[in-house]
Length: 379
Image (cartoon, rainbow, N blue to C red):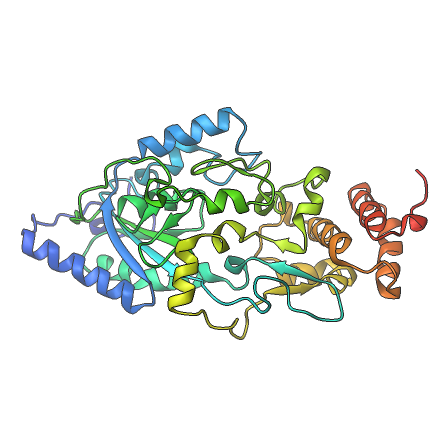
């Protein structure tokens, strides 16, 4: 049955076989469109299933390394087979959008008179919206030629890193991210899935994670909780970036390691010599207007549910429940706040008296961390 609203010619294109020269010209045009739209790198690959990636996901999930994370773990058969996104898919056009920018205080939250929570670089602005916009003309060009094409990024439907690696954009680093030669890892990745028979470079020979990193293991050593348990293998149960998004209580054994982070963690990337070399060669610009490198913790803890979702709703918040933003803020406040500050005391008193046991638990911890155990009523 033909899908509603889709022309029959788009469902079963009847293109005559293209010459090698015509296909190569189309590939060059797609790359040109992607780079012209602001992408830092564009590659083309086949749309065959990522069998090695599927096996890795299943194995890590079996050992509990996903930590309850659902993103691409929910259905490995689906997230590693582009044909589940677009039946008849034959090719992938993969793009990398840079989110490299400077930090206001050499990696720390900007100095101010109020406690601030640090935001990871990828989450300071909606970089995925920019990525999707840059991939749009690529998909439109293919559609204009009579092929089907759909943009996929930041989605459970596809393991973008596997697609980027197959398209030759870079290698899998020991931090589990894709590193682009000479450019590093400060990128979000996205893909145009199409039924056009494009000709990319031959898929790279499968190689162990981190092979391109040589003997370097700076990222593994820099992880505050030791979440990188082997080259390219992340234990999400220890990963601060995931724990900030996970439901339930923030694990007490990792609360001090969280430091001032309120969303995401950049440590494995800031420690990477490839990224550091790029920064020395081409110093990153200061955070541009609209970027949000830090959040006022006391302001966040005073905000209403509606205000929190309006300000931070594009972040992954479990069940879109603002209580988790407050949970995270209380842990960060316990690490960087001042227990003698009257406003901090007022905020702690308020949440210590909340009806939500999860919030009270983290408010108690924060109060004790700040030397204000006197505020905690014995349970």
